[in-house]
Amino acid sequence: MEAKMSQFFGSVSDFFTGADHIPWCDRDVIAGCEREIAEAEKASSDELLSECIMRLSWALVHSRQPEDVQRGIAMLEASVSGTTSPLQLREQLYLLAVGYYRSGDYTKSRDLVERCLRIAPDWRQALTLEKTIEDRITKDGIIGIGIAVTAVGLLAGGLAAALSRKK
Image (cartoon, rainbow, N blue to C red; front, side):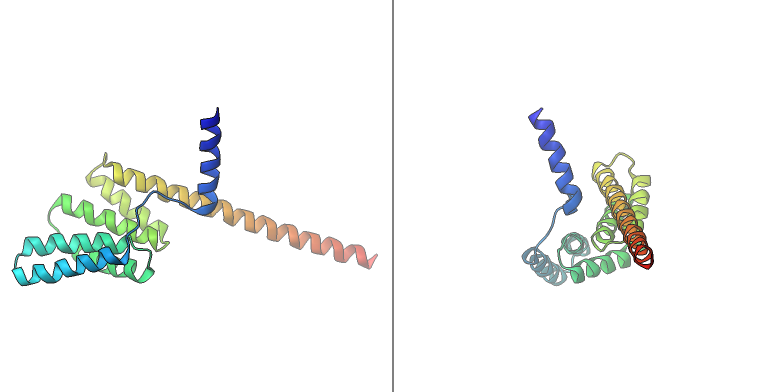
């Protein structure tokens, strides 16, 4: 019983704080990935450079800084069109979905996750992100409805008060 109560209060807390289970990345990791890219460019290995760019893209879309997330999205969008490997496309689409989720574009994020799941229907990370996006859309809808109902209630109360003063 105590475990169920704890789970209930945890889910209520998550609802109001907007908690999700997508990891965050700090600037130190991003800086390290940028150094890796500089070293890979000197080595003249396209495969190594591609791997380093994917790591940097991952770090950027998982950043807490909106400008980093936008930079990661731009890098990924530029690379998606030239991707021939289904596995690499799946990874890029997933990271794009994370980036759009972090930037608040839940519709675009959901579309990208759906494309990702067409490539790999049982991929757990994508399924988890899809649920996270749906939960966020639902939460935002509930909050929007609550705001609208409150506004209508305040308006009705104001009108009722104004009418009662006229009498």
